[in-house]
Image (cartoon, one colour):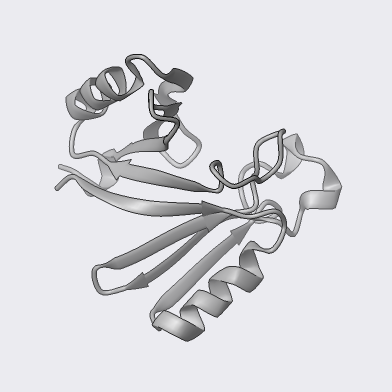
Length: 139
């Protein structure tokens, strides 16, 4: 089933923020550092402890985050993204094409290291979208 979630980008304090949200909202928190991921050989050593992916889950509540800020840094407007988890390859490609019309296609839909199709864009209203289709969770 297709659903929208929220993705927060932090400037090095993702662990602190997501732990705070867990204290406030309850649930299970999964944190993956750059050093624990498949990325460490590609990344500078000083960010080994930065969070590449955080997911807080409590029933239907899912909040995701990361320390992987864009080169411009974290500023109001690029620190919150809408995550669109799609239910098919056709759907992710259709949504990407439509949402990027008049906006900016930042990263095209492509295979990821986590085994999903993923792409990101900025729509014509300046909103950030992360589109994901995980084949493992969709028959």
